Image (cartoon, rainbow, N blue to C red; front, side, top):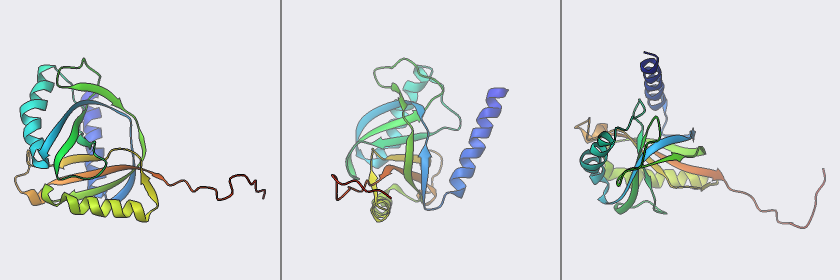
Length: 190
């Protein structure tokens, strides 16, 4: 009963956070345990079939306990946004580490102190527009990307037939640019 109450509390917090999220926000991404599967996709739309045919059956086979609410996302291992031939790692938050299988690897993802996050509602075919917007925002704010971005799939083809209602959150780890001292050998006192 205690575990179920904790799951319901986490689900309620997650739904509230997503519903209140503006277009672009700055958030901390906590340290989490994940089960991951890394692959190369020809197109983004292949992720759901890969999850259904490969990842989910393997997680069930090895008896993996998922965290409720389910927090799944892909980490893009490219230096830039790509539409095709995408080196991606699908991660699913889990309650505990298990033994790696030939397909699934378990690991701890460290905290990301600052991530620029954008909620996007609509089909995957318009991702490039939203990635361009978030990268422009990062540049305008004087931030530097400091890690691979995540794409969190909240609503998608697995539970929503209408692509205009798909909800995705883009999360880009950033840090403030460090200003170089133009006089490195000088000491200034106030």
